[in-house]
Image 1 (cartoon, one colour):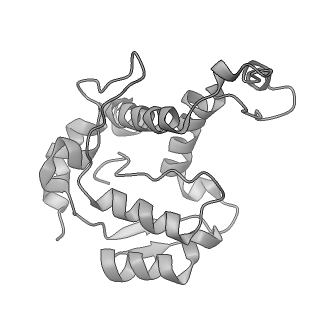
Image 2: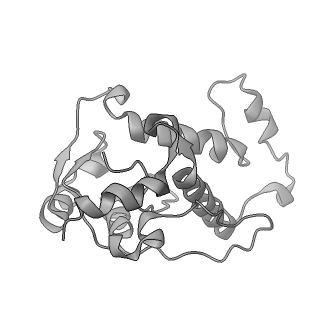
Length: 189
């Protein structure tokens, strides 16, 4: 494995569809453009970012294999055609109800849940007695709600930080240090 960095993302404000999956694929391939943050205290750290934003030669680099879960949007004909024909990769949906078969993305989603979504107003918690559920209830205080622009900034910041954080599965190396070592050797055009 070259890296566990997130290549791109797309925010869907409803149940995601095959179009959202295709947009995410496009965003993973296109050069990442850094954002100007308006929320005080947010910014890119020295190790943070996205592979194609740190190394422009990684823009439009494709992958050979992708693991998906069995969501209908992931397995829609349009999604699989985009992956297999445009990207040129093999799609592997893996067994149903087996998150252990996709540990990297499951760990990433767990990180996002712990660092971002559990801190947003309206978070429902992991169970009815989850303390974070009570802390995320704004009780009508509109100042505590997050706007769509703020949410976009928070997602960008969270993923960028995730990409720049040392990872135990990479012998505590940062994702970005591995980008310049092995990704260029795995480049496909």
